[in-house]
Image 1 (cartoon, rainbow, N blue to C red):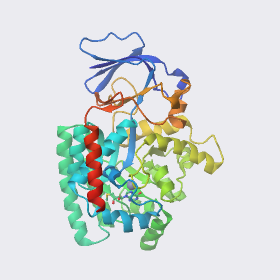
Image 2: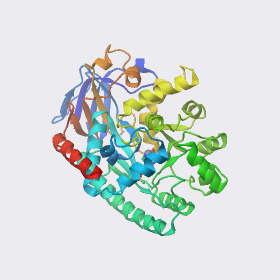
Image 3: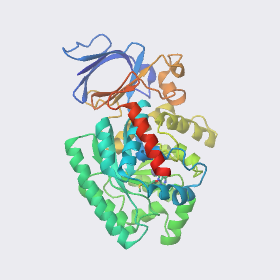
Image 4: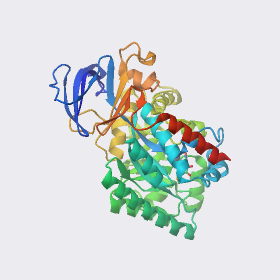
Length: 431
Ligand SMILES: CSC[C@H]1O[C@@H](n2cnc3c(O)ncnc32)[C@H](O)[C@@H]1O
Ligand SMILES: [Zn+2]
């Protein structure tokens, strides 16, 4: 049980003036009571957190990561997507092993938690190693094995077998630990055959899990799909039934036609906007204001650490809240509340979570900020600061009712050991 006393409750991004000092009770993994500051009767045995000069917000949810890629930070800068992937990232990924993946995942989880992220939606390889790390950290995640067959029949067969094994592992892990969730992850229309995409869809539907896929990141890949099929990527996948009756998280969606926009809307597809990765790889800028106007569900992601190069979602929040104003020459687009909702409650909906807001009955996935932080002063308009000024350094993080970060220190890992293992993993990767 955790009782948080006298804390500024950031639970209303639309009407920030209504955010007030409150007491909160957490029992097991749930928020069970929220009341005016001073009104909570503290149950015996509760861990008490004094919230004076602190604020509490819903933990952030990152809807697009390749978490072990923290080990790739800085390895291939200033390149366009296809050159970056084909000539630099994929050759290095061929050298990955379970230890490197574990070390990268631990480092990634630490970075996310220290910057207020409580959950992430990931696509990568060596899922068992990722599960092992995430379980030890007590972080929430949705994991998918990244499927790639490059239209090769033999490869397709082996990918389908791997996918089957990974889904089994993930379901076993979920039964043991509810923080671990499964998804299917066909990498992208340009790396997967129609058969593999349909297979992934059928599995997602059968197992009632989301699909995680890269879509329309660059003009090049769209051209490639158009030449092959006569259709744009969303049109092609829609013609295959890939978006039917499942939750789809489509990363990037940078270049989308009017007809594709209609598919996004009709199929209720969740966009994962990764503004910093798109800028760094020179892919373009997604039309987020148009998505918002069309009531398309937008969430936020960082992408991996070779294209961002960090996992601090507060940076993506600021990028999203600012770049579209510049592109449109209109400072009224992408409002503070819209961008904060993307990183919290929209993401929670996309991944079928019970979080992203601070309400009784919801999962206790919460972040506490020390208001004595230069980027939060003056201590007025804190909700605005979350979007425009906060450096992301949080004080305490609670995931599923358990304190995983306390006074800026991880409670579920030995930080020095994680740094050491990550340095070692980097050397094994590049040498
Ligand atoms: C098959 S596992 C995931 C796969 O995706 C690669 N990747 C990382 N970032 C991106 C991106 O922005 N677009 C496309 N693919 C990306 C990663 O290196 C893995 O190979
Ligand atoms: Zn990606």
